[in-house]
Length: 388
Image 1 (spheres, rainbow, N blue to C red):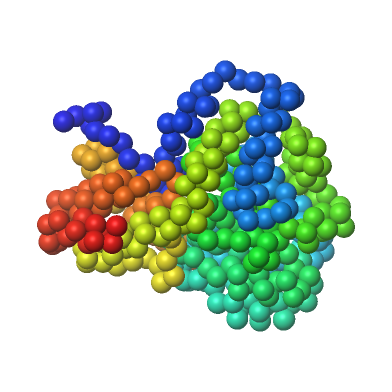
Image 2: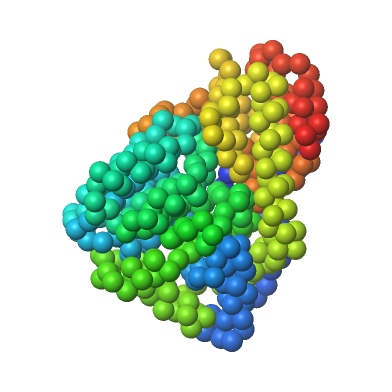
């Protein structure tokens, strides 16, 4: 069988697979965005996003990636001349630190950093200590599910701490929103950001910013920073009118309406349960193959393992693609660790089911065995199937 005839399964943690119904919707003729027809679609998306976020507040739909959306939140909500507390335990937490480094000369902000070993969750006690020792912190950034390390942090516990202060909690929910339990209002999250290309089953191109009451109040108190398109005040003003301030990716928004309806038809709690089951089964299969997990606080949306000695990352992932149609992701390097070539990661979120997961695990086992790793034949699928 040629590689071209093998069914392709995208098990990367972003972008993820896009359902056929969503692709068909995006293939329809374009409509103009300043029309009642578009506004009706946009309202369906906005209403569904509020239900997904479990919030009564606005969820803004921004043209751009999740990084675009998070940067907009960072620069729009920080108090000039204040301190910011940034928590990093992976590539993306470090990115939010880098963004504040870029804006520091213009906003006169001082960055307080909590750097957590990769694969570990932040200790809420460390956050409490930093808040107590640094009066005047106006923003705290935290990654819920750190994609690069397959690690989840206790957002709810950190939110309890920030609610007792003037600091706003900005949460990166890129691989948790729509995949893992998250209650924006009930947990007291001030800002929750995610992107279209993860659990929301869309191609890259949209970022979503949920704003709580304290965040909206901050926007009215603080003058806009050195930004224009990234100024959340513009997006919030248009959202209140059921619109967007600039030309949107119309086809993506139409596709998002379909994808969100699919999530609601399954039931958000059922989605969370499905993702958790796939994650539990995959991690059990990894350990049954003798692999070491990369996280001490595993995320449900993505799992990772270290390669056994002698397995080449590039050759291994190429073999998965060409021989099995399985697409997974390798490791990344950052300030906290150098994981490129040392680990691999697979996704459990979005348009992925038990058959996709079993196919992926069987292929991983086969190629590890081909690379000379001693693994009992069939153990990966058998272990996962028992849990699925």
